[in-house]
Length: 243
Image 1: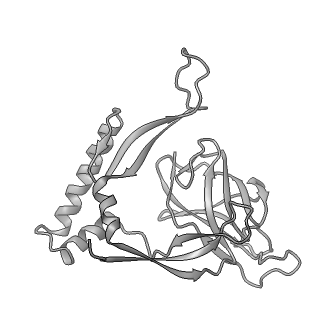
Image 2 (image 1 turned 45 degrees about the vertical axis):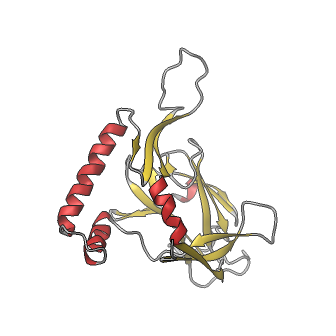
Image 3 (image 1 turned 45 degrees about the horizontal axis):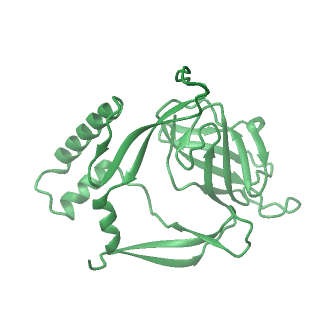
């Protein structure tokens, strides 16, 4: 397959290992596309023979019906991706029933054969080392063990990265959950661990099913004795879903 696509990446310090000389690559993405965006592209670029509005309506109907069937325990294989329900947590005996306090139910999505085939037409361009003055590399929902995916309200979230320590007296400093409905700031008393490479916070009482982006704003620049004059903000590049 000929090369049709190019993905650009920056290198970031790998804070998840003890090796000071290794890096991880993160895709440089301009923005997240909505269903409407993709349908419009299918018409304007791809030459789809129906309107973008009609396609968006059909896609949303499909996803709604897919979710209905997933909730009944069916798995769905579209060829492009596979989806199924997954129960996490330990059951102490054969008689133990599902307990929302210690068990979680979520949906897993994995790439299918058609989407995997598209990778043959993609090249990866490394743009060099990113300005890692402040970055979020990984978030882990402590209750479920989910990485870069789920949020469990009122439980802990581990945030790994570079120069994350919340420092400075600017009122903007802190940890935020952000979506179209607004910005929710984590109370300062709910920041359990406040280190340059790791924050541990208590997730606010966010509404179930909502999507949020995670932001960290701080004046820390590597030295608590000499803070930055203005705060800097790191935005995690994946949406997180409230479980």
